Amino acid sequence: MSDQTLERVFKALADKNRLNILKLLRQGERCGCDLLDRLDISQPTLSHHLKVLSEAGLVNSVRQGNRIEYRVALASFNQLNTQLDQLIHPEPTCEVRMHEDI
Image 1 (cartoon, helix red, strand yellow):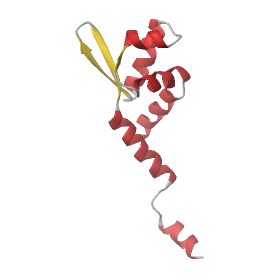
Image 2: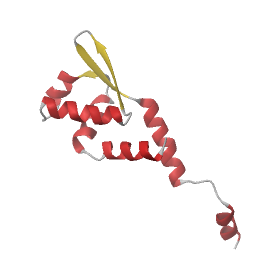
Image 3: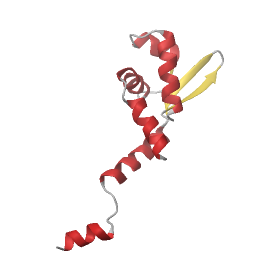
Image 4: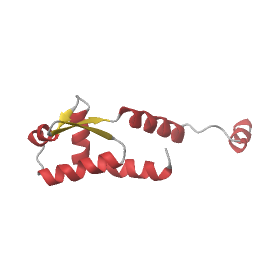
């Protein structure tokens, strides 16, 4: 995951409405109308948030007839988990090893 992608993901996650959408989607695939019924936001606002989440790679969508079903993009969250783990636990460098030996 590139730094640009990470920045996009963090910006997408930094909004309470988008977090609420993800919480609903982690329970399973949902259509936009179902999300609207459970959230206190307008349809244009929901569309905007779903677009941001999709562009960040956090949500996938599939058209089924006249409905669009949304789901969490698990592969992206797995990549994000790996990236965060690498940020927290970087591989030791020569400098780090030298300081640990002291």
